[in-house]
Every structure is written in C-alpha cells, then in structure tokens.
Image (cartoon, rainbow, N blue to C red; front, side):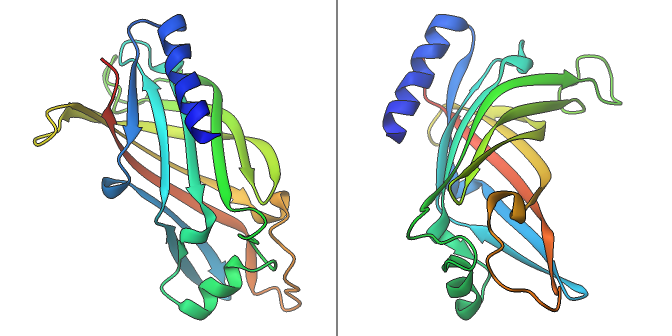
Length: 201
C-alpha cells in the first residue's frame, strides 16, 4: 500500500510539475519527536522508524507535496514501562493501529521577516490529512525550509525542513486512560526535523 502511494506521488509530479523533484526522507538524519506535560514537568520522546517522500521545487515552494508514515511501535520515551503503556490500548493501541500517516493536500507560502526571496525565513503552511489511532483529521504544519546541498557520499541533492505543531490526543481517541487526577495534558507538541535525499532524475 505504502509503495503504491510513493509510486503514485512520483507519477503525479511527472504530470503536474516537470521542475519539481522527489526526495526520500533520510530517517538516519531526521528526527520525529514530541513532548507532553506531566504534572508540572514535561516528558518527551521520539519515533525511531518513519519514512516518506517529499516533492519540492525551490522555485515553487507552495506546490510542495508530502507523504509520510510513522511506525507507532517505534515510540521511545527512554522508559520501558512507560513505552509499554503508551503502546497499549490506553493510548496508541499499536497492535490495532500500527501506523501514523500524513498526506498533504495544499500549501500556502507566507513571507518571513528576512529579505524577499529568502526561503529560510519564509513559512510554508502545509495542510493535509493526519491519521492516528484510526482517526483522520485535517491539520496544518508550519514548515520552514532549512536549505539544500549535496550529500558528500551519495553525491545527490539533499533538502532540509523543520516543523513544530500541537495536536490534541483526544481528537484522535488517544485518551482511553482514565486520568482522574488530570496529570497528563491533552496537548502534544510535535517537532519535526527532516533531511531528504533526491531520488528523481
């Protein structure tokens, strides 16, 4: 299924924008992390297994397309007992809902405070369908372009992006745990730092 989505994305680029390139997310040099309030402190974690493709044309950044998948089982908060609880049906229920996905639909470019044409100061508000715990909702990611270069070993073009947003776990049914004391926030801050390697010609 995911392979078909990736192939469809490449074909869509070939049809809609001949100047856009397809980049594959480099999970070894990217990070998907989150934080949530617990009592008066903050608990953080990461998802270690994720993949996806990004279609991007630096001349037409608002035409960006993103398809990404996270393996829910890969959640890691540096605490085995807590991770086991988060994977249970009290929270993510990874046996029933093994993947978390995002598929963009459109984007809007907002000029930043830097000079005109400075993409690293601009923000791309990328809207798309986010699916977690079997629930799909439209969210908007404020995406910053971090730059591009050439991979020193692969000799291929690489691009970087970052994004930070907040999702409410109750919106996706990730609130089965009876938190009578109200010690756990409903808001989860999600932080993304992505490097992607060009795979199209």
